[in-house]
Length: 318
Length: 256
Image (cartoon, rainbow over all chains, first blue to last red; front, side, top):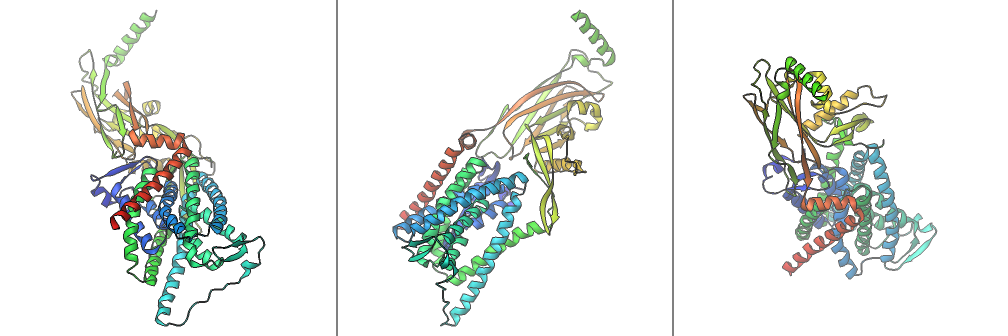
């Protein structure tokens, strides 16, 4: 189940036994997966966690290990990005800190929920359902949005207007965010942070794909500080999530993270080069299609009667 | 007194089963330890031995050999999926009190010809007997289905192996067999037991241990993750950051 026919044929090349996942997989398969996802994230400027974690499920890594290890990998792959943004001063540290406080609370809640459902034997379902729902929504939104963008680029003139004042501005506890040029309540960024933290803990993602649109459309932050600020939040929240999973579930697999990471960093460099040659709308529509494909595969796994109805797990209290 | 009893026992057994008491197993394994290294991809264990006896071979009732290799036993939960609101989710579950992580049984002839049910029950030799399951929740009426599922899944991934008639047994004396240890092997002390049977009764047995252990880096990481989880978590973060940063630094160096 762990190895596909590809892996079996090349097993002599380099099979590696992962000490925490307790499965043997091909090291080049992991490097390759890291490379492909890294390339995509370089091309599209996304974290890639939401693609990597389901791919790890598909190659037979236990979901709990995949989620925790992916959190570890995201910390590392976001690290050089944060440094670059700090140098360019495109991080709103104050906003980042508010998002971070929310994120830490969310991550703690998320790990609690994760462990509770694990004891009930429902954690796989929870993780997969979250993926189907979020990938479905994000993929569909991106698909429609980029189709519209392509249509718009053919008919110049119509530029979307961003709403500057909405109900967000009537909430209490206002705070000045100088870098973003905002004077808004801390409640919305805090809530966004909590939601992203929960997702990070349950899905093993950075949550950039939720946070970036929320920052632009909900909080009204200027686009140039959005990516840096979200990376700043992600790096600390995923680091915290990694530690929580490592200390409560013992599911962080270090060799797995390192292999994915090395492949990922190399892939990201190539991806960034390819990305500059393609049009933004084309890139987004490609990404949207990929997200929808992964979503569909996961959804089918839940909807089609599995060939084996029974699963074995460690004895829990449930 | 003691000697008299022994003499009596010997006399009785000599009358009942000629030659039985004198037959003993001498056996060994190709390896006493199975190291799980970073490139561990399964292993083959060869078991061989001989029947040591002081009397001529009994012609009337031939001997048979059964060899079992059992991994450490642990309680496990078997869950069953059911369709709820259109999606397949885990509903019923049964906790099985004790199931070996690995179990292989090899025999020199089909098991039911060389072992009676009562002896199987007593020594827990066959796969269903090696699994202990007493209580199931009251609402689960078909708990045997869960035990069957456990055996089916474990057999499919090579963790439970029934290998009837795979022991080469020469002249009622020498025997040899091989057991494939799969790549998904878990750590622990494995128990290798050899039984000699005659007339479907176990006449003697021999047990030895096989240590399956992670070694080197695998062992270090596994132990650290469980004994010092915080240190392990911090170390994972540190190594991942260094590796990620290092790889991109190398790339930048070559590019510019």
